Length: 299
Image 1 (cartoon, rainbow, N blue to C red):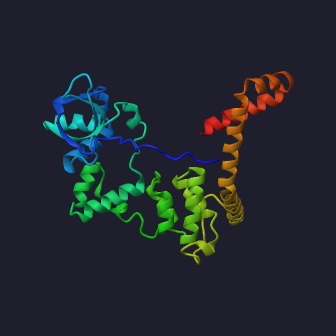
Image 2: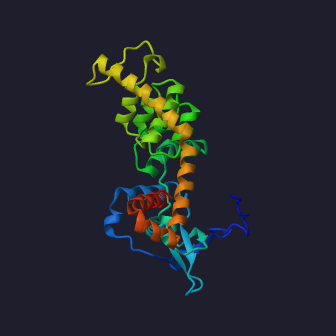
Image 3: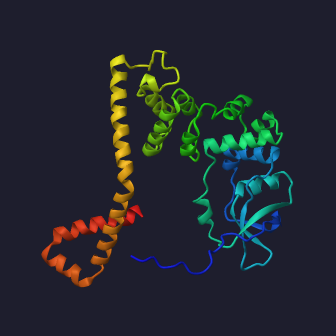
């Protein structure tokens, strides 16, 4: 099928320039209650704003009914904290669309590796570890552990996990594996959408000694015998082979599903075909409808 050429320019989501706006001219879309202000999240953001400043500008849209005023789409906590600090203005991004849900539903909380890189960047800029710890409302030891988070992790595994919320302890387990096995383990974590410390430990337990950093050290997994560990290694090897086979054919299989579901949607949109199937093949029609519906759900 020939693809239609794209026409027209890409529509920008934000105005080209940010703008410093008086907080009095920013109209929040919801109230920040007392319970929220007592939460740990609010305390952490407040500490970050006080010690580091605003890193991610609030998002506002121009109020069409009142020129000079702005609707606050995202950043209610940051703006509330600035008000409590006595600030009178803040630099904002100006959204062209005024639908608040568009932004709030797409906010990605800082992933573990992203936080690590932010900490390194702050340290390189000369920010003391103690100040970073206060900004994030954590102890200095936590900052130091996060600073060396990726020491011993191969770049390929880092790339796979860069936007995932992986516990610090799970990275400690990955460091016990050789680079090739780290990549395999990261692939399995992503495929299973499991990043917990216990799952990472189970991957180490299922790793042959030859693929561990300390290959000569006897492998011990709490609660498991040597026979059970050997069985885990065998099952893990089989799972990895099956995963790679599925991975190789996934693209083609997915394309086939898209084509088939698209064809069935058009077929069922034809009134004559639908009437014929209803009268002569109701069971087949039901299956076609299920397939078409599953394709819509996947999209």
